[in-house]
Length: 595
Ligand code: AGP
Image 1 (cartoon, rainbow, N blue to C red):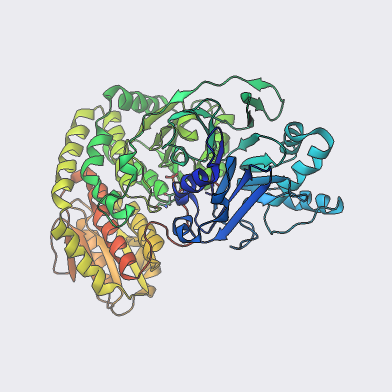
Image 2: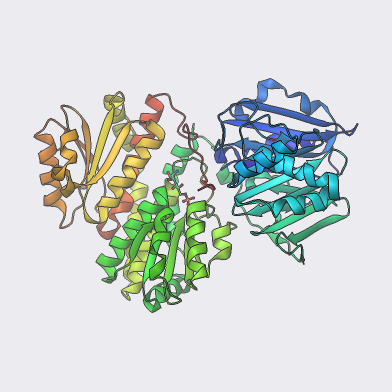
């Protein structure tokens, strides 16, 4: 959430690079944006606007006309304060000498703001961020910029990353605790970038240095220095060379990333399962050795984690606990140094999941993770990592990462049962079936359904067993991009209350797998139909109960993977039909780095 960019180096168009870099971070927040730079006369220039930076081309920001070697930028996802120019970042200190961008939440900002107001600082925004920049200024007047930032950081509570510059210094100072911040190095001498994520600067460099929690970095013409924010001790860091597939982060022939990423599932499943068997077997062994395993994730990754608990039960006859990352702390009394925490995340930066890991680590729990972004915090702090290798996922709605995560969990469950080979064969066959399924005719069939139901107010989705979590995931997908009120239920639960919601013509998706749950879920669909519901069956076989049938291949224990794909396509076409931007839905951001 929120994208941060920084540049200090020999190039004289730092502000232009900031705007360009922010466009690549827009998935992190897109309600407003801003850039501050220091021009050749030593003035701090500031430009901020509400709206998306990708739509800022016509503005011809004045800031681009100056010669500047030092710039910071920000794309915002509002937490404290509405979407206004005033609340957009960068924020300036009282004197206007310091500019600062921030991601995260300063939890003690109310108390700090009161203190600063008493000291005469005037607040122009409703943000928690403004307290940081004023606090820094308060200390800068006593001990200078570097020491002032060090002093201010010690007063902050919460999870945050910020980047500050000072009008009178050729310097960037950044600190993080809980929110991501990565340094890009070079390629020119004495050239450094800062970004919330690598796409901020990947056009320029793929050499990075990671800033970890409770660390700060000071970059100036003499080079780069890292410190511990608690002890002020200097820290040595090494440069890591990244290998990134930049092409796959472009839309190519597709109108939206979401559709492109859905279609990429022709290949991504194969990439996910094509792992070193030792990697899968190593994590499966850790699950076997553990006395208690918790599967966690948030949002879609949470639904994947819940699917995992069904997969382990069904395939490996193993009880694995599931909880959402944000709820995990309530179970901490059951954690010991024999527990395993298996966390699922696309970004590897989700604050709720990272905090669950912190809680677990304090109890000596071993951390295993299944992530897409291999350079993420989660990947770096885990004891065991399986990368899903789905390539950059830019649309806010997760699609290809979801199915790849489920593929890895399926492999792990088979490996725990001592049948890794069988799992690999099942998933290889499933990958082939998905490849056949994702053709233009199939998409048109789903689009025709979307056209039919585009104006509905509510939709319901039912599933059972392995496919119950997919009913929940289908609801998230529909909610986030179509804005239709959608709810997922276990089919059997309907009659215990939710069936009261069914009215004439309301579309209900029944996910009907070809397994022992088929007859039950069909009965549940019948109960809905009897009350006027319009039944959309997602199933390998047709049924007279279905008003509209979306055929999916029969994939056995991989059925959740194939069943969610047509619903992703439906959600996409509903979004288009309702004139929503499926890549950047309202109120959301790709990577949720606040609690
Ligand atoms: C997915 O469509 C959602 N945008 C969201 O629920 C997401 O899955 C969740 O925020 C977790 O993200 P992560 O996988 O990056 O941890």
